[in-house]
Image: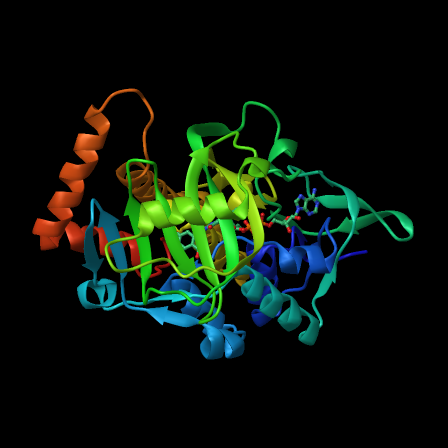
Length: 392
Ligand code: FAD
Ligand code: PHB
């Protein structure tokens, strides 16, 4: 097989890139290890920045998002019985939208199908070759045995555990990593949210987040130790802990049947540069943020926005200046998001270092958010995401 851009991974990054390239009349093939229903049902992020929503609209894939997405004007911070509303839209003029990553991925796969973009699911043993040569190619095991995809450029959109980043020779990449000693236990429940906005809660027992997917479905998270066994969390214990951490006098979290639960470890990771020869990394393949800042999916979409523009200039005009700058341009937003995600994580999670000092600093920072509009505005600007720019 032959195509112009070979894309590894059918997550938000790979699928969005394929659609952005098609809009520039550049062909691509997407290779995905899992089957379609696995990819469409994987429960993950839920909060879209305005940049992400704008891009989905530009691509013409936002019909369902515009109908079913829940626009939000702010979030609440809650600690020690106090609740502070951060009015994001009032402070920044921008909005955030709740719309599950599952829905995003489903819409993107449908659009690829409608536009004749080939997405090959269930391909095994994907390997990338000739990255610093004139003939990069991808091999994989498909239905007909070993296959080969020749391409001009390769996009590694295969997530943190993919094969593209490890295919870069040793010594090329610098990797920055921080593993947090805690993770998030996340649930989906058939329960109408009893809050109008997301609630990020600081509590002596640990962090908790109240989010949602629809007027009937709640998405909730609890900070737990990184190696926590989900078997130790029967449903009653989960609700009890959510009520303890999120509840306030006269108000409770709405309960209902839990139909999905899992524990995700938390990590910060960046590799630099996000390129080697003709291989360009995007999304989780190149960086991971802790979810407290709700940035993972949005960063993945931003990477491919920059990458598609750069590939467009390469194929249309033979102009490689944007491709050469791709890594530096993408990393600017990646590091901004790393810093903000780390800030939100350190502000709200129980630090478990045996010292009460950290908790007092957290309370001082929360108090400052209550007192200072400048502090609230800074948080809001980071949370909603600065406007997209050609170099950011
Ligand atoms: P992915 O979505 O990981 O997509 C990569 C794709 O590549 C996958 O479909 C994978 O199957 C495929 N692939 C992998 N290896 C190969 C291979 N060898 N060959 C072919 N295909 C391959 N972010 C938030 O903002 N909030 C959250 O609550 C949140 N929760 C998360 C929970 C979990 C369990 C995880 C893993 C991530 C979570 N994230 C969250 C992060 C967010 O979901 C990611 O940032 C986002 O999915 C990144 O998109 P991506 O396309 O770069 O990678
Ligand atoms: C979610 O709805 O899954 C969600 C929202 C905000 C976050 C993380 C996850 O910070």
